[in-house]
Length: 176
Ligand SMILES: [Zn+2]
Image (cartoon, rainbow, N blue to C red):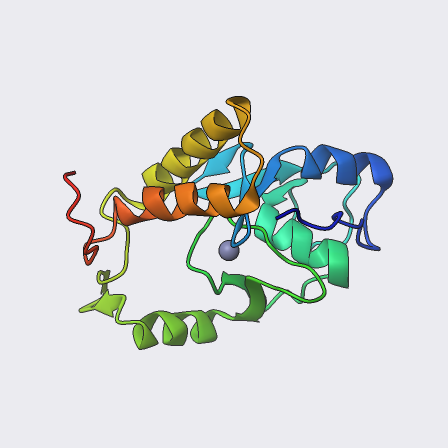
């Protein structure tokens, strides 16, 4: 399986798009950021970016990619990971792992997934914590690609394996 070319969205420049896509490993499921991370979220520096409602030119990749396709993000809106993988930045015309919504929608979605109990994030949250999960994903995928792995299906299996290692409900019987 090969993925189609990742066409540049309208609200960014060719140079910035090249810099962004060079840091992303696309699997057949999630597309993962392999650059800088903060609290598990991918961070991207774009000094020319004037569309975001942020004072900083370093923004979460989820916000950056959303605005690269759609233009400015409304101040009251957050970009949510529908796939529950904070370092994912898959957003394209046909398949989107990111949605924009209000903070209350975010909390409702988390509650619906039983991730909030007595105010604490439990349930599906990664046992290693969000940041260590993202670091583990980044390390595993970069290693696989360096070793020559290019098949997006195989990269998706590697990703699923890394996530399963931190899943409290994993049935794979792993030691951690
Ligand atoms: Zn995803």
